[in-house]
Image (tube, rainbow, N blue to C red):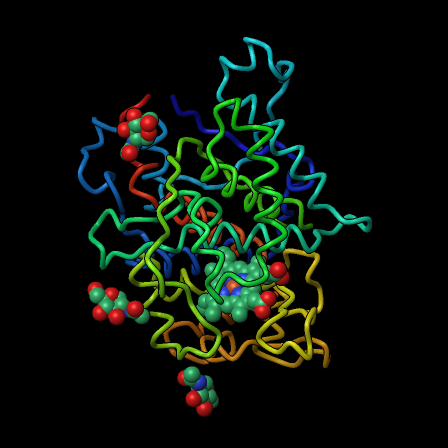
Length: 350
Ligand code: HEM
Ligand SMILES: *[C@@H]1O[C@H](CO)[C@@H](O)[C@H](O)[C@H]1NC(C)=O
Ligand SMILES: *[C@@H]1O[C@H](CO)[C@@H](O)[C@H](O)[C@H]1NC(C)=O
Ligand SMILES: *[C@@H]1O[C@H](CO)[C@@H](O)[C@H](O)[C@H]1NC(C)=O
């Protein structure tokens, strides 16, 4: 059975206060995103009619197509004790324990998100993005846990730097698998929890039910920082993510600290505040940044490409944080469901 769950963490629960012009900026960004940008359905959401969808399937469909929010401020009160029949009977219960455990590993002493959190966000992307429309509408691979479960994936250079979070995921799997938790879901819960632990990070709705696979995802699908905007846009298009959506997602580099692009500058961040989920990344890619900020050529080139430039500027503008959170959350929900199996399960098991 599947249940929708909201990550329950105080870090992300703070409301974003309004300011003049926010509604206008938000509606401009949303209209750009909704005019065909990144609203394409995948998996069995393509094949099934609305009446065949479970409530979770329908929620995912609405989030992808822009009809519902991917954020939530719900809190989960009176969580039953771990290991009790009451906990086992409530799909969300175990995830509250998982999320609390993860959050304690992702928060640094200054209250910002730490290296493990950065890796967790990237791991969620790299598991999900081993997926391509070129393999058919169901894509193959996707958010299926294979980045941890199939040893071959972590041998690939594109996944260098994820070793610590992979080892931690194996530990968490050992602790929680007995409660019915899949590796695929753990990885995506890790990405969502890490995001909200970063101050200003959105609180993303979580959907459980992904099946695991120990078959390595097709190789060669992950983006590289030396690729042109054309190639990157084509890659994300093949994951049903269009230029505005790519621009929103790549803002995850707000928390990044590169190791291998230039090893002589290992640890240098991609904006000056890698512990905070802010829009400074967009501002600094477009403008000037302190010398320690290491800009990826891919981020620079995307920001200048005519298909991404206006969205880059909108997120960088004063007031860009709230619209960025809204849009990136919607996309993240899509990305995290990017696996035919989760959608089949979503549609049929509840
Ligand atoms: C144009 C597409 C993208 C390219 C070319 C790209 C490339 C990279 C590279 C080269 C690194 C540094 C790896 C290292 O040397 O340690 C990195 C880090 C990171 N990327 Fe991306 N990325 C892309 C999109 C994304 C997306 C869509 C997400 C998440 C939704 C993401 C999340 C991250 C995170 C969180 C880190 C930091 C990891 C850490 O500091 O440990 N990236 N990315
Ligand atoms: C990135 O942009 C620069 C400047 O426009 C250009 O010289 C370079 O070839 C681009 N890189 C790629 C990989 O397209
Ligand atoms: C996207 O998929 C098409 C096939 O549908 C393929 O020709 C193209 O090379 C893919 N793009 C990238 C960057 O791999
Ligand atoms: C997921 O796994 C369950 C249990 O093994 C299986 O019954 C179900 O068919 C699987 N779903 C998909 C879409 O593979």
